[in-house]
Length: 197
Image (tube, rainbow, N blue to C red; front, side):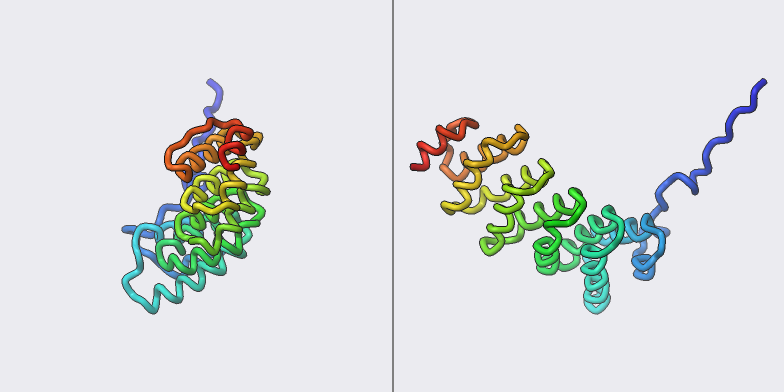
């Protein structure tokens, strides 16, 4: 009977479990293990730290991690955690990482800017919609722009109806429908351009 290969050691293949009982341990944000840093940051997405001083210290570390950790999934987790711990800081960091090398981080940034960015960050969302190479990022930007009834927003959404991704063009159409109080001209750019004129 041939030898059956041994089952892989779960400790070698699985992501590390969060700290016992889900207790946050700040020192783990400094771990050399990317999975530990990521899991520790994800614990911070569950609830706001009650201690204000610790929240401020941890938030500073999250800002650094979101912008400079070598692992994209850690940067993403840090940005998500920062959104829970200090939303204003998360918006500022999202603005800065919207050109991150990882589409995952840029997608997180687009969601944050769309949900919390406000009118001053409309140009950043338009830029993401117009130039980001990832369709998920462009789609998120198109959805977020539905909150801003401005000529530059409507023009950018109309142009995006020609996006190579149908999910982006549909998101642009849905945003235009919201901004036009329910008028639906479909996904043809020419029809929306006539309406806009």
